Image (cartoon, rainbow, N blue to C red; front, side, top):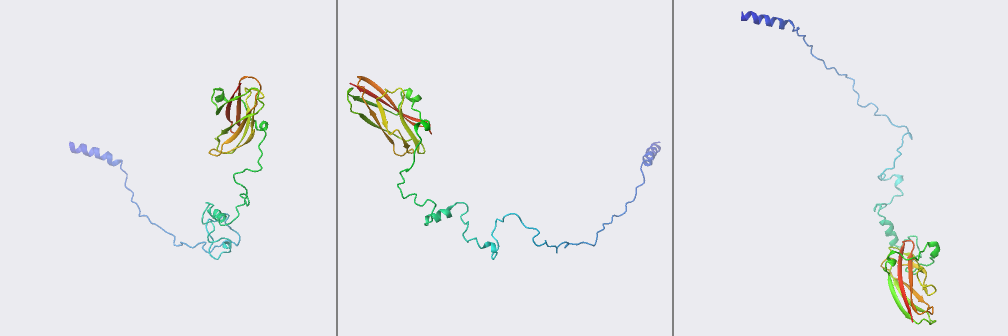
Length: 233
């Protein structure tokens, strides 16, 4: 009974299996006509193809294009040391005679007028708070006709030469104060200070009078304020 059942199950399975198709062996074919030198004898027409870029190398020895290139040309690259070396060996850097005059003197320079430069002689915030560059006190007879003068030195604070203008703030006693010079060019930081003479003229009235000298550097928006207190007796 068990053998009959096994045969019955095996028979349907065999019915679904198709017959195997035999495979024929593959054949690899190659063409015997192989050429490796096609186009090797081709040459461009004379003047037909030319390079448009600039070479970054020297031409071969004997090339006519090498006639203007010296052995040491460009040996220092873009440092400019070759030009500096030529200047130090007696070459003219293009400013012949520039140092024939005193190099500390700026000749021929004229600054703009105070109005054109936009000079401002009003008191700045620090001066209004009572912080001045310098304070001067003077005692003079109220009836004297002699002018009294004091010199103040203003140290430069800018990195370059700057035009300066000197005047007096509106809060100053009228007609009593003047200064010399009223304009000029201030030295660079670390250079010589600028001296200004403050001149006082008595007005004949006993009492205390105050003046505010303002040195203005319009380009730098810088101000130096000197307070002058005059006691007339």
